[in-house]
Amino acid sequence: MKTRATTVLLVALGIAFAGNTVSAGANGLSGGAEPASASPYVVGGNDTTAAEHPWQVLITNNDKPWCGGVLVHPMVILTAAHCVVAGNGIPWETNAAFNFKAYIGRTLVGEGGQELDWGSSSGEPTYSASTETNDWGFVSLASPTSAPTLKIAGPKERFLWEPGAVTVVSGFGRTTETSGASTTLQEVTVPIISDTGCGAYADFFNPASMLCAGYLEGGKDACNGDSGGPLSGAADLGVRRLVGLVSTGEGCARPNYPGIYTRVADPAISARIQQQVKAIEDENHFPAAYRGISIVGSGAKPIGCSSATKASTRATKLVAAKKRALKAARKSAKHHRIKAAKKRLNKAKGNLRKAKAKAKEVCS
Ligand code: ARG
Image 1: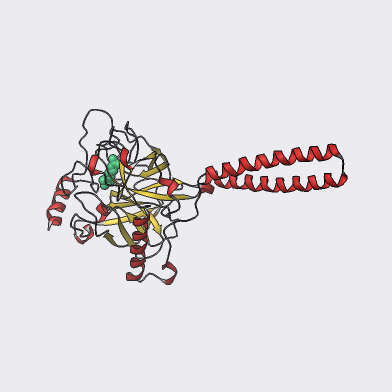
Image 2: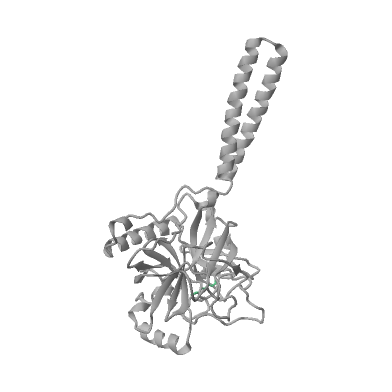
């Protein structure tokens, strides 16, 4: 029942973005934009390209930038619930005032890339517009895209979103609290912040479905229009994983108000999202080749793990070689040769111990 009034309000105010702003009222629809002071709330990112973020989706409403999204499956976009459904859970698209399109492969907001074949959208049923919890939703495509997908970090890939982990958020959202959409895709690096250290949000921050990232000193953050877009981390061997979706925040880049992201890599949530994607595959009768697709990653290791593992394997082989050398020296029965071989073996063993410890440290 709220949908109609909300729509009229959105249209009347010409609000360009889906709004999920902490300071907004119960329906979270104020669109954000009331700077608390005169500081320039620059989001602090830099220009980037679709080539760097090939899974980044731009959702437009009536051909104006509306939200971000991330391709997690050749036929499914993951985005924020508030981007696709109203507070009552009814999809915005059921109202004629909304006209969504989705693009992938865009570096510039108004051109390039490909339009995706929008099928239908849905929000997580437990999404709450008042508490802004469980903020994830889906766009199911009517035909597949060959664009690269980004997998959600798996249960054993927790290192990617531990406090302090370096993550990147991207989108066409505002570059200041009051500006319009960015003309060029932006990215900004933000560290993950612990659940208990998320600035001044107090009880609003709910770690059951929210993940905190950014800087307590402010200056770098996602902003309106970035919602639903990816927060991702880098693993070893060039692998990237999705760890969050832009969800909400008090203003943008304000001190003590870091960004709040949907905690998609939490095993409880990623399992649920995987189930929901499975249901979408079945209900929308995806072609056989697009069924049973795993959208949760596994096996990614921290950066440097692979080379540390290789170094440890090499050190193991070296110890074996030095053992053979010692055996040969013993056969020769030459005291000085035996002594030297023992010394080399001990050195190799020492190196192996160090290499193993190092690999354990980097890989865990
Ligand atoms: N709700 C906003 C949107 O719809 C995103 C807000 C993110 N804000 C932040 N400070 N990180 O686009």
